[in-house]
Length: 208
Image (cartoon, rainbow, N blue to C red):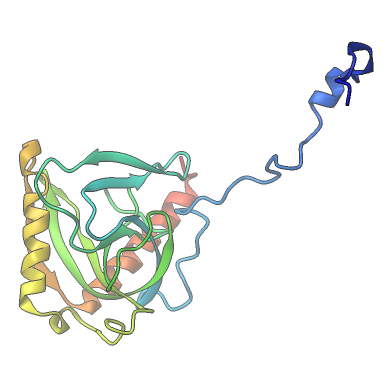
């Protein structure tokens, strides 16, 4: 078969280049913080987005401008996340971030996925002197943990591991993190509702 001659080539006009291609996206991608529903059963059971999988030493986090998950850093201390960690959509805290959640389940979850979690407690803490409380939850669709209803259902050693991780994971960065207490599921519900209402105020004034 003869190769095509130069005269056989079809010229491409400028207008043809600007036509939409089949693979070109026709809609803006959903933003996990703003577009994912909190869920009809919130604050008890709610949707959350996983940023860091159980066993990871890489701190992934939401890039609030793009909605993508970015690498924030590799942890400076010789520790890994004891459980899946992420955020609750359509919530906002005083640090201008969505509400954090630690999700206890059997397996590591994939960064960027979302799952249904059941709130069982609230870990009160501060990061460099600023309030940084976190919801403690279990995966609502994990048969090993979904029957847990309150923080008191967890073994004391599990709570000690969680406390130790958060008190140690920033030490080699010269940053102080203090864990104060583990509160009941009722306290977690209140924290989620407060963060949801605060997010509503944020929307009313125009999100940035």
